[in-house]
Image 1 (cartoon, helix red, strand yellow):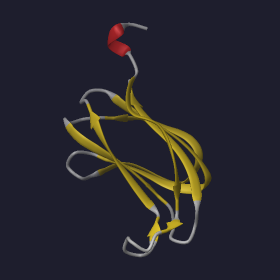
Image 2 (cartoon, helix red, strand yellow):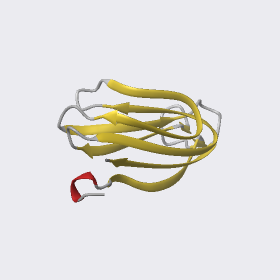
Image 3 (cartoon, one colour):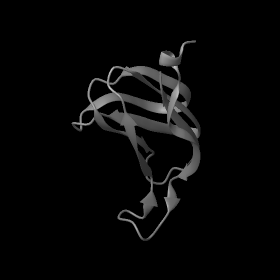
Length: 110
């Protein structure tokens, strides 16, 4: 593998629990997590997800347009998703209110 094709980690492996009851937020359920990602144009984004219950994954580009959506993911690697413009992409991980899931997610570019 050459230096130009190296894996660039955008979000290191992160574990969290979705769906916890939290009275301080509207709706009282912490069922959506968002992560800003500094992506580089011309590269492909990959998302690795492991969840105890199915979750929904969305990747949004710098203009706010959904470029990849996958519903009901328990264990999957999503990608390659091409990054076409410079800016902050956003990873959104969600679950229905009332459900709970232990989630581990990581994001990288190649």
